[in-house]
Image (tube, rainbow, N blue to C red; front, side, top):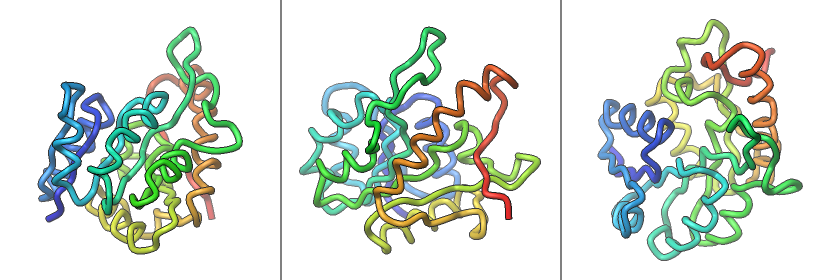
Length: 198
């Protein structure tokens, strides 16, 4: 059992929190009430950023002390929204939200994952008709191993998880969000994920 704080209680955060609790972890969900994120992060070993990516850097930078020596699992994508509310452009072209978070939080081990799929797939990868891929980006091998174990608790098989390397590789997976609005407009809001076919 691991103590986990989920920052963000929308569809992504709520889905992850419920699944991790079912897997036996001690999970706290922080909403937007003042102090909730700090209280949750202060007592957690792992913190999951499921806040809207456009505001994540400011929100999490304010928690620098609370996030010291923790693993920060970043599942968000920082984008501007188009007229239909779907992602339109990257906020950090040539970089990534994960890189910005790691720079702002040098004593926190940031791991990027689960950001290349619609949220239901995060906790039910086996429901897709084809094998999905979960990518890992981060500087700390031990932190990535811990996140890999969390993913297996969520139903991800080990050979479905690909470690891309350092945190800079997150800019590739974050850029993949630009596929999402086109896929949704083409096929509707049905669960899908990026996959590496071999």
